[in-house]
Each structure stands twice: as C-alpha cells, then as structure tokens.
Image (cartoon, rainbow, N blue to C red):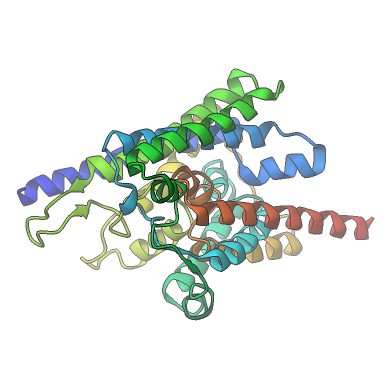
Length: 371
C-alpha cells in the first residue's frame, strides 16, 4: 500500500469518526441520553425510562458487535478490551470513583461534552480537569499507584476475558459463532427488558437508543475494518489506522479527553497526530452545539457558587482518575466495552452504577442537613 493511500485511509477513518460522533452529540442533546441521569431518575423518582434507553442502546451494540465478528469484519482478540487478565480491582475501584464523580460533576464524560456544546461553561471546567486528571493517571503522578498497586491485582484467564472466549473454551465453538450467539442472546434480552416498560415504548425513547447503539457498532467497523491494514508498508506489521492504542476502538471519552489536551498543548510537535479519540471528543461537542443552535436551546451556564465549583472540580478529578483506572466511562465501558461481552466491562459498569447511587445518596444526605 502506498503512503498516499495510508494518508487517504487516515482521513477516511477520522472523517467517519467525526460524522458518527457528531450524530452521537446531536442525538444525546436531543434525547437527554445520560447514564447518570438514568440512575438519578431511578433513585429520586423511581422512573426507569432513561435506564431502559441505555439498556436498549447496549442491546443494539451487543448484537451489532457480535454480527461484525461473525462476518469477519472485526477481530475480537484485537479490540482494546481484549486481554487474558480480568482486572477486577481496577474496574471496581475506577468504576466507583467515576460513578461518584459523575454525580458531583452533573454528568459523565459524554454528558460533559454534550452540555459543553449546549453552552455550559461548567462543563468546560469539568472537561479540562477530567482531561488533566486522566492524563496524570495515564502517564503521570497517579499512573504510578495505578500500575504498581491496582492493575497488578487480577485474575488470569488463558482463554481470554470475554464471555464469547469462555464459551469457545468450554463448548468448543468457533469464536465468531460464540460472539454472534451470545451477542444475540444478551442483546435481545436487554431489548426485550427495555420494551417491556410501557413508558419506554415511544419513538422518542427507542430511536435515540437505536441510533446511539448503532453509532457504537459503526465505530467498531470504522476502526476494526475500514481502518485495518494487514501489512504496513514501512513496518510490515498490521495496523489500525488513527487509533490511540493501535488496537480496535469504539467510543470512549475519558482517556480521549486527555489525548485531546495533549494534542492541543503539543500541536506543533510533528509526532502529535489526530486520532479517533480526539476527533470523537470534538465531534460530540460540535454535534451538540449544532443541534442547540438550530433548535435554539443554546444557553450559557456558569457556576452557582463556590460549593458548586468545588463539587464540579472534585467530580472532574474523580472521573479522570476513575475512568482511566476502569478503562472507560459510561460509554467506554458502558456501551463499547460491554458490547464485546468482556467480563471486566461488566464489573466496571456495575461499579459505576454503585458509585453513582452512592453519590446521589450523598447529595440527598447533604441536602437534608441543610433543611
């Protein structure tokens, strides 16, 4: 493959990523898609509608990912979450920190980007703090205890850590077939559970879940198939064009926030190149902003006081540290990771929800003390 072809392919991958993340941002702004909001609705009002919307999106992503694997379009052993180590402590601790932090920060990583696009200066502060904390946990001060003490605690599975790999090892099935069958089973159960809620069965709930889940599936195809080069002309090794990790990636917004800051700060360094993660951050903000301007919902928003500022600063730190430690946020693990049926992702998602519930209970406790 000629270098000009690689450059063109890089542009195609980044362009597709921007379009998909723009769609994600617009739909999330329109539908108020938010995992923290979903947990908050349940805790405060007993309303499961947005949780069913999230589950519907996960179901679509699971079925889509399994179908891509079965069709030979994505190699499940090359995705960013594929490993022989179930890092349960990292997933649990990171998930708890992220879940608690997103409550303090008024939303998860994706919601922060969506709110920023809608005019929230509070979200701009959260994004900067989250990105800085994430970068420190990737390569800086908090990376040391993460690598030395937290990530070092794991359970080793020689067969891999996805349910499809376990099924292959136990029953002797081909991995693509296991991925398809389990994706269909788990995905269909989630879709069925979502549709059982009478309050959920509206176009305004189903369509956003369908599109957001579909965007995740499309991103798996973009990085795992469109951007796959079996033999790089210079290194003669396989490469996944424009990805930050050199593996197959979908949407995630914590580590990419750190990579975005790094790209902006070191822009003149020729070694700094755009990746799908950086472009997806920009795309979500752009999509949300575009929708807000077109439908006249754009509103500037600032902090209500020092306590509000303090909560959002702390929330940003916890999301940055927790998101990197857990290898993803409510989208990174809660949609992309869990769509691969990786056991670590299930642990991380459960911990994120538990952390969010704890954060909401803390807010209720604080509010009651002030009354």
